[in-house]
Image (cartoon, rainbow, N blue to C red; front, side):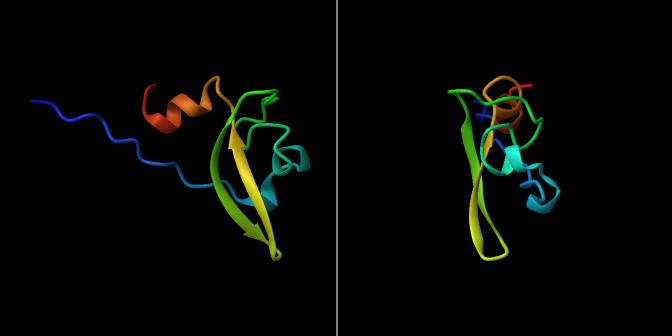
Length: 69
């Protein structure tokens, strides 16, 4: 019997180091590719009292989070 691989979430990026397009969910928070109509939420972070929801792209970053690479 084998266990399903458990995906360990990667740490969230430092919001202060992201470009504005990544902070506004236009570009991927990990690789800076354009998100378009696809993406996955990786988490919410607070910066200077404001809540930001970070998104990653479907292409490469999502598979790394799920441990499929």
